[in-house]
Image (tube, rainbow, N blue to C red; front, side, top):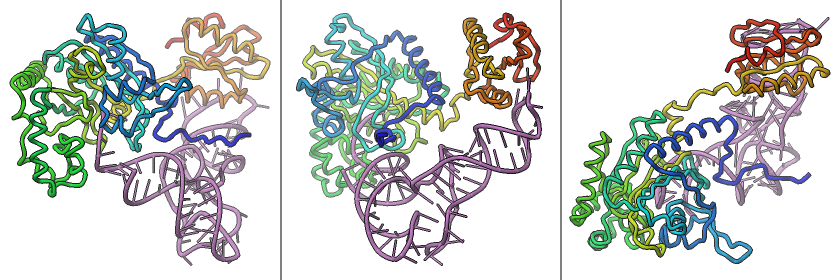
Length: 419
RNA sequence: GUGAAUGUAGCUCAGUUGGUUAGAGCACCAGGCUGUGGCCCUGGGGGUCGGGGGUUCGAGUCCCCUCAUUCACCCCA
């Protein structure tokens, strides 16, 4: 016997039978809500050519630089397990020429893979429900995807989540702000933490949301991103806020909110749940008008979000919103003595044909053990077949809740059992 | 990638300054009730003490390495 390591790979999760029902519920809500907003599902390959993410997500991002599962296949192609879906979706829409007829509204529920140090709410394989509106430049689209996320979360019973909103500017104003910020930060370099000193070159906007108090003190004196927004970007931000207010969605403008992927422009937002600790952002998104162009296509405005389902489940659990376990069968078929096995099996199939969910005793245990099993499965009924009943063409039908039982003709069983 | 904590039965956990055969509750199986679940009583099965190496007469306990989980950072959903 080979000595196989039974441990799952680091940062992965088995979703066991006890957990699949809640996944079905969450995924079902995602399908319903997305479709109620007119979005249609898209599925892309688990792996893509590496360039899709290099150019789409950005060469200098952590995701591309050190977190991609990259490998060479037997044909010498460099492939990558997708670390996110937006760049892949852009590639797919472009390849199928679907963007010639905007708007294109799509959603996905897909796994993503990142080589990270795992902790709760951060896995190497994780699932995102994502939504994208392509070919829509106006602020109503931004508000729409935020509203969609809100509808989804409230359908699951969540309240008390915080929407944070910011604008990163566009090709016109972002470089101006970035330059002003870098100049400012360099003049205060020795007041910043080590991480932030590195960020000045790598990703200066990140300094804005550093948690170190001394860095925050520096940032407070520096140039404010919103002051550098061009007129168009300002108007866009106000347009998003006006629409959100009209929808009754509460949000907070947060000038320090920065998203790590290169493709974002203008609107960025996060929806978070504080009790989750460090990995508290459940949903993150924004506008990425420049993404398609960076993949070699024609410019196409787009806005969307990604919502981490594992983190969402943690939130639901913390809020006590996981539904109680439901009965998995309607009736359990018990029988006495191995010679009655085939007849019990015939009865079980008779009931299944009538649409009932049936489990039959598989281990030939005592009646006591069989009833215990039926109870454990929350079966509504137990059908008991013993030699005495078999000889007369009847079976005992026992209601597990009331303990009432009666002998009934076998052909009447399908009619007498209810869900 | 950086820093720290934890790892004993399916689950939650005890286990003294290193000292016989590693325990409890829950769960599981059986019997009490020879064909009736829940409550109760009795009994039973189950453990490479995460893995490997070392110190020692002797290691669950001490040391090193390794794997995994958790927490924080980086980053992100």
